Image (cartoon, rainbow, N blue to C red; front, side, top):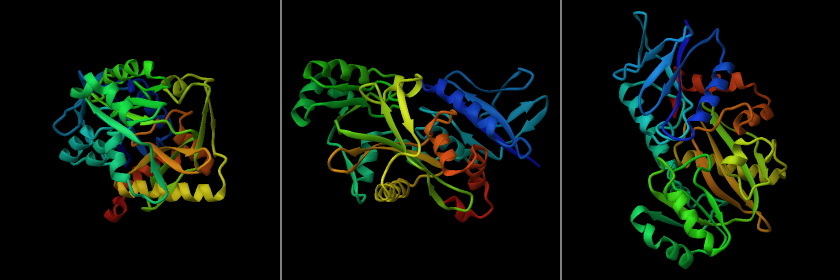
Length: 340
């Protein structure tokens, strides 16, 4: 009997467009002989599945089931590929926990925590060989005097970004004081990001992104790193999704010592944050000091053909179909110790 997979996509933010592309790629890779995959779209207005015949079926939110011509479809596992809220901030995970449906991502608490960049930095503080940029966290009531607070505590240039956003939406690099207020307003006004803004001192160096996942045997496997080189000021939304603006090198050109150090750091981050499934850690390797600086962690990484994780999976020598199957089997494995 095939494993019934709810492939959850969509979302409440501007990242929904990327979620649809990611979900389409995952669906195309999954073994159709082994998995019966049902794409489920979640929006602010509705939760639904569209059948092969083009019929829109609403999800029964009491148990996350589908009624297709009188046939009640109950799922064995949810494959969450919904970037941003509610798939990456713990809301969806909390709901799935309540109805008892296992899923492929981090749990509700970890998801909620890691959507908050500054709170995440506080938890991972102290990990050996990992550094974090000096920063200021601003809340909605602080908006009036935010510029003064930033300039008093930090040294230019700054990175200004929503504290709970994704895909670099609402992010700016500030090089002179006159640019600061516009950058703060842009970050505060970014939709569905919680009205918190994080301002960090700029770290000069090479930028990397690296995935890690737990396989069906319960083993933690670190994927090869990707180095990001962009013609933009930084790796913003356009750099991520507009062709030709960014060069991505996978596997990255790192020394063996740097690879081993990064691997240890990423494993420690995964364990410290109690992650599950696949996650991706972004970091800088600071120029001159050779220190790894944490940027952020992404618990629902993009899965388009050009996304970092698929690149890294291929560099590891795996097929994407095998990789996604590992994520599913790790969740439904009969041995509960493999789910920790």
